Image 1 (tube, rainbow, N blue to C red):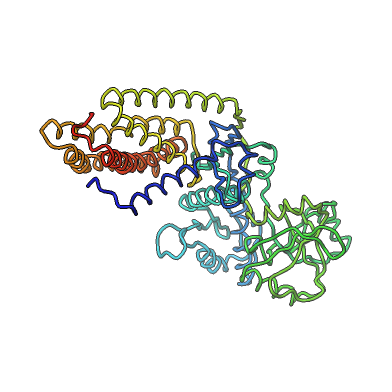
Image 2: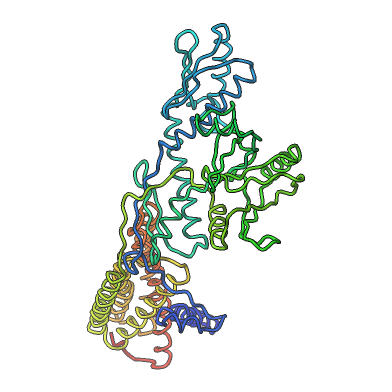
Length: 534
């Protein structure tokens, strides 16, 4: 029906006005946008790396280092279990690929193998059967060898890549406003693109800091023991040697009491004496472990280790309950804020190395935008001229006005959703300009056919819009399915193209079927033509 109630007219008009309001900030400069009233939207279309420039990096994940740490943890577990069973071992070591060792007494070999077999658990937690983490072998009469299985190694690689991506996203874009691209590249690399990046060195610094933090009890050692530890590397079993930022050696218990994984949040602060500190809060698990450790070890020193460096080793004066505390060291206000950011983002599970780095200049983006504007203007002018020539001034004007609103609504949709516009996205908009009038062509040809068959103008217009609805929806829904597939399966530029195409399809159906029909209805109501100028 061509009849539109007052309510429908108001709703359509409001939708168009809202579209204009959300699209308008894209025409204003930054200063003008900042001066807008608080209730006015100021979001603009986010430009991708290819349009506004930025940083492009390819990062190498140090999987070998991860494997060494995993095997060190497995070796510590094996050592502790064998010690609990009072089985003495010798030559226990790992080389990054396997753990080897020997038991002191041959008659204890059977019991030792049972204990070591129990250390090999399913790769996937909470599963029965399936691949195990370790292959346990007896070597000779008293020797044994623990080797990570292929499934375990593959799982470690996948987990390391996924965790690294999550941590990088939190470190580089803590507010979630930067439309960066971060994705796996092969088995051990990560692709990182940060549009609009101004300080590439700062990004690299954040990438290369692992921020592995742990809390260890300090073993009070005399000067002789410390000297032997430093010169000969000899420490007591289940202990490790670490150095402070000032070079002072510390002998720590190898097993940490709490780790950075148990941190809930952290923030920079100021001590009551006026120097910068980092306040932290543990989750429930960390709070219980921290409270238990400080309760049982009052008077002992408790070291905070960050990336293998002891940044402070204060003495426990009283039990610290409630899961809150602070880290003090040689911090400046800026370094305290930086450490807080790193701890909130979490520790990187592996070291990352920049193997490829490119800085994309904004000049390329300006050229692309300029070329896109020219292409869009030419396409719009060509389509508009075609519609005027084919369907006359009246109906050509309705189609072109609907097309104009279509472009405005696309810009509003991109701004509102915070979508990123890339060079392929501009191609999607230009393609939408051509596709947007397809619905009008179907409708107008049907109206022309009905008018030629002798139907009166009102009946011809109503029949044209009504009977064209099904083929219009069929054509656009199938295209929308293809665009959605590109978005969910593709990545990078493909997704940018798919986003603009999907938004363009939805807006073109709305403007061609509803907005253009409203214009036609209002014109017919005023003009009451005897024949249709089409």
